[in-house]
Image (tube, rainbow, N blue to C red; front, side, top):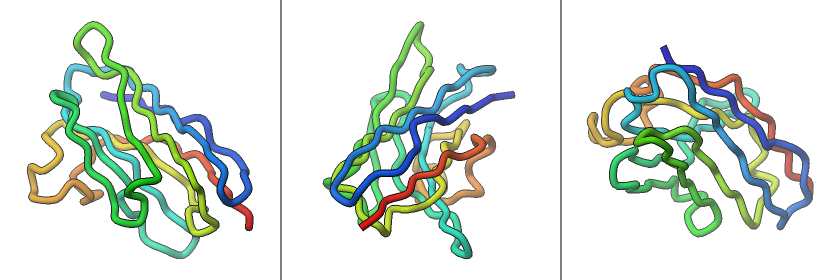
Length: 131
C-alpha cells in the first residue's frame, strides 16, 4: 500500500507561481515513477508531468513545457516527496491536481500519461488561476 498526500494548492493571479507537494508513505520502495495529473470540471484527467525514481528523467505535457518543473526528494534511497513547481500560471491551468504512483517505469506502456497505469492516487489539491 502507498499513501499520497498533496499540498500547496491555492488561488493566484495569472502570471503567478505555486509549488505543489506530494508526500509518499507506505511501500515507498515500490515507487518507480511519479506523476502529476489534473482534472477540470467536466473534463478528463490528463497528465501534466512525470519523473522516474531512478535517474530522474522527466516528461511534460506540451501545454506546460517551459513553465512547470517536476522534481523529487530522495531520502534513504527512496522517493519521499514529489514537487510540481508551476510558473507563469494561466487561467487554463485551473484544475484539481493529483499526484499518482506507478510501480513500473514511466514509459512501460509506451506513454507516461496513461492514468490507468498508476495504481495509487492522492486526494487532489485545487489550483485556481484568475485573469
